[in-house]
Image (cartoon, rainbow, N blue to C red; front, side, top):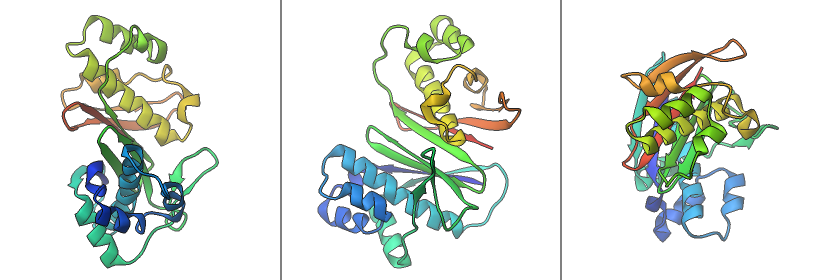
Length: 231
């Protein structure tokens, strides 16, 4: 069971909510946010809050398999539930930058934020998630980053280049979070075009290492793309 949690970052901006939320994120993030204000700080705070809520909520529910459950959460609701629980999970980063719960190695999560939203995925299998706000594209950017067939599709066959580009971008970013290798992995070695072309926006793919992954384009707020990759 993979659970995905979405939160609007402006929900943590009111002073009372912000003060509560700062006490409910992991100590390292709290330290990084100390004294910071503005949109980037609100996004980071919302992401940290979602990590804590996602773990708590996921651990209290049952379910197995590859089903994806999606939740849109409010900052006030999350802070209230976490205050009642009275516990903050520690969050660390591995040597390659992958975040994890040191006290719960059986639970995997990924987090992302862009524009006005933060998102977190959590499961018992490795996973990666990415959200991106749609922006104006510069010339030939897909040729610089994507696999050849993805680039060709965007230039010749796409009916909505902006959305299709960011859907692919999110899937690549999510995959790099899933592997933990980040941008040094690059985007050209694996094509997510089958996901883009699938009627249900989902496909299982084989990687160069011989592993099978499942990739999904999830329903996102207007003007955004949201991609998920899992084992």
